[in-house]
Amino acid sequence: MSRLFSSWLFILILVLIDWYVFQSLKLVSQQWPLKVKWLVYGLYWSLTAIAVIIFLAGPLVQVENWPKNVRIYFFSVFIGLFIAKFISSAFFLVDDIRRIVQWGGGKLFYRYIQNENFTAGRIDRSVFLSWLGFSVGGGIFGSLLWGFGNKYRYRTETVNLHYPNLPEAFQGLKVAHISDIHSGSFTDRGAVEKGVQKILDLKPDLILFTGDLVNDHADEMKEYQDIFARLRAPMGVYSTLGNHDYGDYRPWGSQAEKAQNLENLKAVHASMGWRLLMNEHVCLEKDGQQICLIGIENWSAKGNFTRYGKMAEAHKGTEPYRFKILMSHDPSHWEAEVRTQYTDVDLMLSGHTHGMQFGVEIPGFRWSPVQYMYRQWAGLYEQEHQKLYVNRGFGFIGYPGRVGILPEITLLQLHRKA
Image 1 (cartoon, one colour):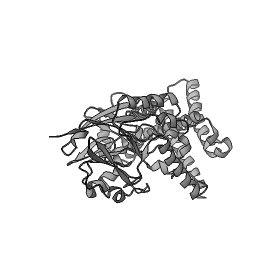
Image 2 (tube, rainbow, N blue to C red):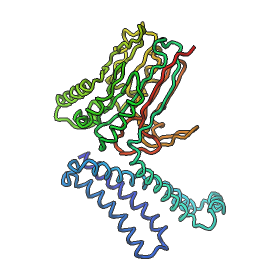
Image 3 (cartoon, one colour):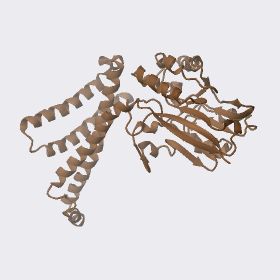
């Protein structure tokens, strides 16, 4: 019953937003030719009708059996339109509040907003705000469509890190860091191959992967397993699990089936030659000197993510090592536990956020909606002698694109600081 109620509530919200936006559409189209108006109105409500019908008749149209590309892009366009309309509504609401204040007799406030500078010249204020709302919403929707072409535009970020306690033998160590492959979202094998080759071209000494190999199911790797198996480095390829790897976000026939899926995923890591670290540490040796690599299962400070990681178990026995690298999928782990209880961890590597696949990054300024959920969401962070690097993700999930936040391959170069 609750699921049925949620479905109808969602449809009601969808229709109400569409009706509200339509009022502004009628306002800005007053001077349009009649045929053009009816064409635009018909198209507008047709999209709403299609969305409602598919949402209600999901079992009949068998959306899950649609071709993967069709399914992904259809729902992405639908959600993009919904977001654009929702944001546009904020501007229309400003105008409605203005008119309510006017009609309600708020004379002082109304006198202020009657100022000619506010009206932007001769344009009717309501029309101006409506066009502004449509422009902003349309711009966002357009950027989401443009972002479809960015999902395989892998960008290499080279980061130089300096440590006084780095053993001499590891001076200049090149570490390739990748995260969040999400193989279940891929639809272009050739593009993924180019991304993997880009990693190999860096000639790293060590390759580290910080979780979310799949969206839910180990079988998602079947088509791409041979590609990622090409990743090799002199000091090895090491990996950890992310929140999606446990299959927590899909229904399973039984707990045994879910547990078997995780075992199958572990086998995928092994078959590719990746050493999966499950709450444990390993020693990396070079020219008789050693550093420690720690890898834990998913550990999050956010309440909606299950904790599987056991840092105490993984950290036990690492005391003799001068330098430690931690692989932990969720960056919220850094402030919640690593910074307070494990101050001997020199470098933590994470992913998880994807930079929300949407944002702005220009010299001197960067922004993404994800920063309101995660204080550390992309790039390098430093506090005292400890450093955290958050990879923006190799793959994508949900929205099949990227706007402003490109998929990332990180090259970390470690140096001794005198």
